[in-house]
Length: 129
Image (tube, rainbow, N blue to C red; front, side):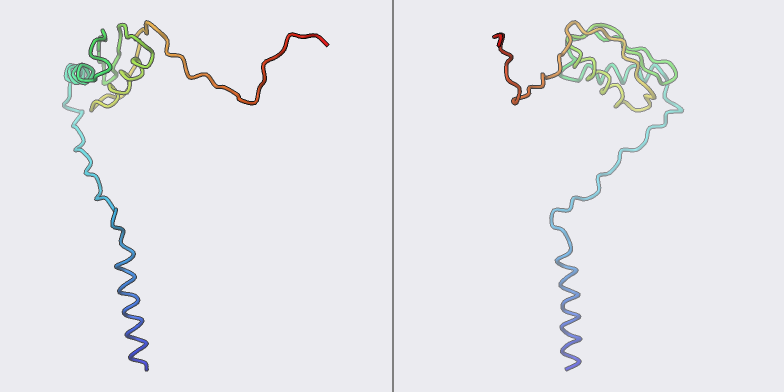
């Protein structure tokens, strides 16, 4: 009887480890190697940011100038919308060795945030009581 209980216990423990493994588990994503920023010049950072902006679909036809000093990237010029300005900032921040992005671009049109609507409010009537 003891052997039977021990066998059942061992079988239960073995099967629980099999079922505990997830089938949808994704392997850990390999992190890209960190760039050696001590040997990266401001000119290289500027070139990398310009290439990143030129390769971004929403920024291809926009006039954005890039200057770098001490790893701080300054963007100037004109973009079509404020969304494009934000996109340029995000793209520049994604370049290796960029410490900070100062975006001084001017947006030709402001992108308005979506208007909040309240379905519970009723239109005010102009009738007097």
